[in-house]
Image (tube, rainbow, N blue to C red; front, side, top):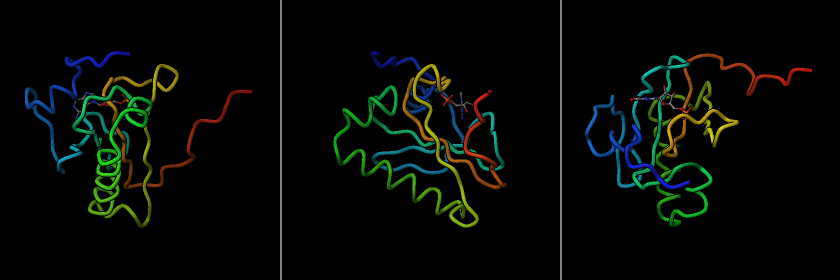
Length: 122
Ligand code: 5GP
């Protein structure tokens, strides 16, 4: 899937639409989700143009991957989320209901987050 430069996170990266920014460095930008699913719900996005985790993990240079994941860990620490805990999540593709085609991590925290995933219907 080709990267779509008109996706909403590309517009945020270019400064064309605002975000509630909480962190930025050379490899990552983090901001609060517009529709939070937990008391803390932060999105962490790479600065490069990657559609999904698949794309990012395959094509991004090692320095960019390391920088991005180190930033995500630091953001969670700076949020005070390490103890009692937090969840990171990346939706990849249609079955995971990925809405925005720019790779992003969700960081959820601030309450007991329950089970990891909805159980399969039997
Ligand atoms: P996905 O389903 O792609 O993993 O998650 C996309 C997330 O982006 C959703 O949680 C949604 O609320 C969030 N989102 C969509 N548009 C915007 C926006 O314009 N600003 C912010 N801050 N979050 C957005």
